[in-house]
Image (tube, rainbow, N blue to C red):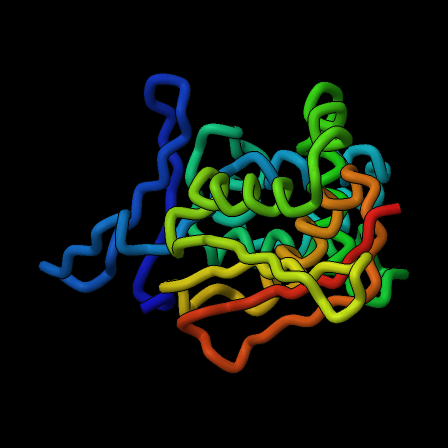
Length: 220
């Protein structure tokens, strides 16, 4: 279906809306049926590339198609954008911004958490438990994604001072592979503000109907 769809942007009431046009006459595609992502972290990419310097941003822009480049340059925090475009933007940005990292997409997610949760948010997180931080992340899932349902769980491990917390996303089998690492890095970044010490993590991706991210932590 991706080959049969083109994207364009229109400006209406200060929001950038994605218009989806199909090349097949008579076929209709509902915008709500296509996975989308909020523009906040596209803006984060734009800021980081501008901070990295003109040469790196020019290199990044040269890797994008005309349509993807338009979304990169015009995305706003309140806008929703096709997930396939977002993945291409994030992929090229990760190659440039986090090339020296062992897991570039993980580093991207961690950096997004640092950027999204500044000022007062960091103060609030420093006073709550890691479990509460992950619970809040689950509640905010649909703030960034129009697909999937997020929840969480936490259990005591065999070691009294350690706990296992799990972030769960259901009903989103088409979640793009890069987001497995991005979500892992983002949650790690959020929980780091609570002064917890991560001891290990594991992604369970064998069941695409229920993605699971597991962490073992102890309070410092």
